[in-house]
Length: 312
Image (cartoon, rainbow, N blue to C red):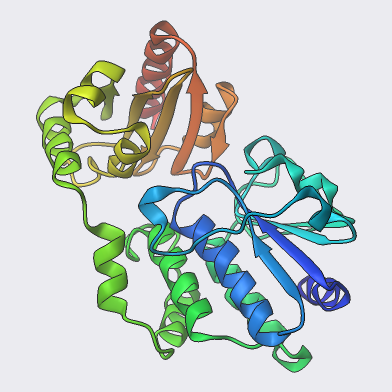
């Protein structure tokens, strides 16, 4: 499949790369990293990265603004996006062909070609694998591509702490740090937090509730976010805040947005993506998400999480 994808990349003059809504470092890293590999390898090709800008990740990449006409006869590649509903910028269907590259469970096998590897720590790691497979076909790595792919791997492995980190992940990271980019600056930009977010972090640690099953709940209503001056996307950065709590098995963050309540699930053992699917979400076995539309529904999610932890 990697060879087929490389052949498609070689065949097109215009390539447009998408990723998921509410992007994280792996979304930016895989999208931008792939774009920079293609640019370094084939300088005459027109390569664009599109989607809604995420202010907290602007240090990684500035996205392109293009018209609908650019999609005519173009190859579209969607990175790090499990299902079509979560693709950012709905113009992805305007291209001539499209490709899915992802590491989530393949429950929506969209695209003319698709490469899904659920064993990969991140799609950024997969893009490095694509580069390695295509060296003989002209693929080249650049310093900027390496910076972005390294950021994506670091983000999706929680600085190499999550179980998704494998020997291969460490090998890839070891190869990427041989390129010229400032790792210290990258880590600082990825993990520094605005003082208002740090204060909300402290509030979460003081007020979260954990029951006897090892399930924990954090509820962040609109009024509370306004009190701390934090927007929902900033609050989402704190979803791993309970990972060091002794006795915790899994936890859920309910983050109120204008039209929905975001459900962010994390686990140290119980498989939670099936629970997310029950509420029209999805994700990885130990990291998943969904959306609900009332606090009564959120309470039911919390009860389901308790049952899941009690049975684990």
